[in-house]
Length: 64
Image (cartoon, rainbow, N blue to C red; front, side, top):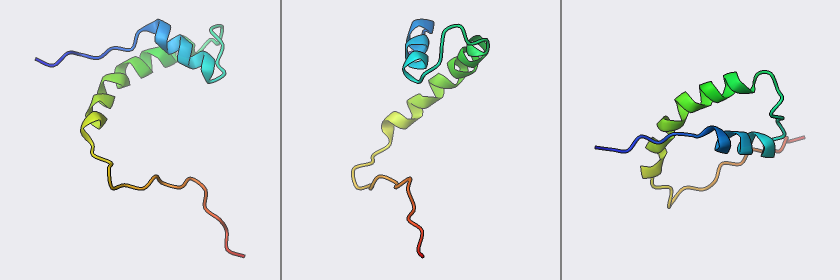
């Protein structure tokens, strides 16, 4: 049986702080609840082989 991965609140608050959010933000509890439900779905990405994949460029230069 596969172990369920959980995001504990302390880790979430630590990440939120790094991203510039404050623990006093009124929506942080709602955001935690939402992220906590999504977090176990990220386990699917562990098995993806990206060996021959190039990183996607997020910048697109305009041709003038």
